[in-house]
Length: 515
Image 1 (cartoon, helix red, strand yellow):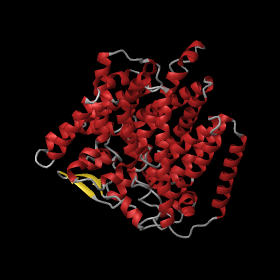
Image 2 (spheres, rainbow, N blue to C red):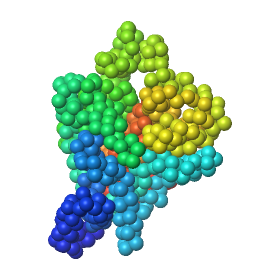
Image 3 (cartoon, rainbow, N blue to C red):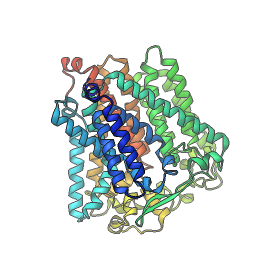
């Protein structure tokens, strides 16, 4: 493989060079932090260029533990690690372009990619919104970056992996990630057993705030004294949706992996309860929707019957269950938390601090505004980025009052409603078009392929897409690093697996067309 030949050409020299630069960077962190960070950046670039596979492996594993790690790193390294994802994208992009300049790569996956046209339309609409609303360029860039940074990585990973990785590499990486998921599941079980306020909770989320030159980089968020598991991700919803993604991938493998079906089925049974432990309604509902999708595609009547029975039992429970106190508080039980949106008193209880209230109260204002079609611009409404920059033009234009951080946080938590306010009806339609196109494309490849390995990956993605879209109704998943990264990363790996293993056969039958 190309990557191996590059590595072997340099022998031990790069290892000694990396160690020397790392020692110099560590020694100069206090006296000359700029030099230290420059050396670390150079080391990471060289790793991405000469050892792309290991560098991507490392970041994919690190990101799952990042939030807890950031609570304990020295202040000088906090910003470096906090924005390591952005630096990873820049360095990976530089490495890709450098490699493209020196050798030929297979770009077939990019030419016939289902994301291309919807993404282009979305970006053009976003730029149009920026121009019409006369947004500050920096604010517009940061707001758009928050949503699309890992969609860019999706393309970079496919360029590298389609030419340098084989299916065995992709399978090995998936196994490594499943080990990470098992660790997260064990933490979830431990948190559920030890309860709120445990020493484990406080270790995983001590709640350290961090400011840089007046900007709040970290809000010191901590759920340590509240119910619900969050692993090393600080936020229960983030942990729950992360576990949903990998539970659905495991469900895909359980349907297709010859000789390993029982293993993956048992692994799914081990992972799934952690979704409930997270107390995340979005994750719970999204998991059921993803499992229904997989069961329908596989025509698994037993699984569909089991899921239907679960939904009917849940509906019966909700119809008979009466919650006498506000279930949106942190004292709510697991049943109250999941069943509360279906209670007649829910909107009254959740007034001004919950997503359904926000959407029902302010939806007419957004849809009836002169900005309804094109929005008020990236990050201008219901965005943590806008809050960090104190940019609230979207609220002013929609005539929605600012009533404190908890209130604006509820608007930011509405996911698609916040995106509707930022990008308008046209932008939101283009964004949904992108995911629908991707779903149709992967389904067509799944139907045509006879490779069990690819079909397992494809089933997982086909379950993840509806789960992600549904959960984003009530949570900002598309903006979050731990959610956005793993979705686009796993999607890139899935399409690369197909490109490496089944492209020739699919082209022979002429079924691969640009969606």
